[in-house]
Image (cartoon, rainbow over all chains, first blue to last red; front, side):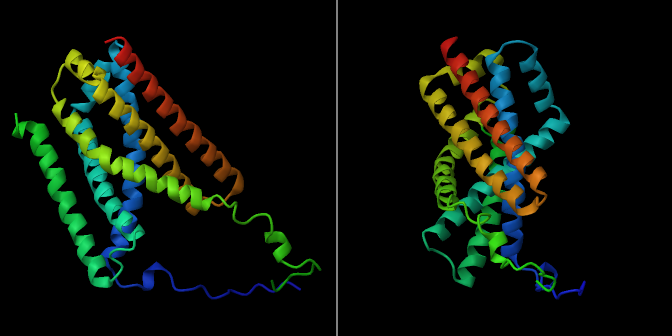
Length: 130
Length: 130
């Protein structure tokens, strides 16, 4: 007897109205994965610096190229967002901020902080505070 | 379960495949490394921005200072530990073919460990050949 009947699935992502909480949750994971690549970039930077030779020049040439700058900007934005939202996660871990209004407020605060801090970093990096 | 013609109870198939009793430790280490990174990332960003445009010797001498080198060591260790734990969960969540999952978990562990070791070695060389 082979009973092959399509069993009902529980409601999934598509039935939910958009909320900031879901977007920030997904972003936290996406930026985390992106930052793993950034971490390997950091390891490359350190190795290039330690073992003198063409490696340093190669790294610098890539990092200061338009493509490299876009990558660095992406990593910095991911880092700042992941840090801010990570602190939000740590606050949840100690039991703070589970009420819906608090969730939304902390979420928008994270977005605002991420934008402002990333902008400040690049303002400083591009000679704003020489 | 509709075609369960075996006399074994389905739970027998599940036993031994469940919790490895390692989840709490994973959770706690992820939090410890996240607190460390929350403290170290602002320092790292500050250091990185201050090195924008610096020539090779300036950058290398900055990293060779004991304070900078110590924090950079702490940073790369916490970073790759945190990265390994985070990527592990992502793989657990999305990869369900056993051989592929085990392969990716091994690649994740080895790659993060090797990158951490290479970074530590590089920082050591920068310090001891300053």
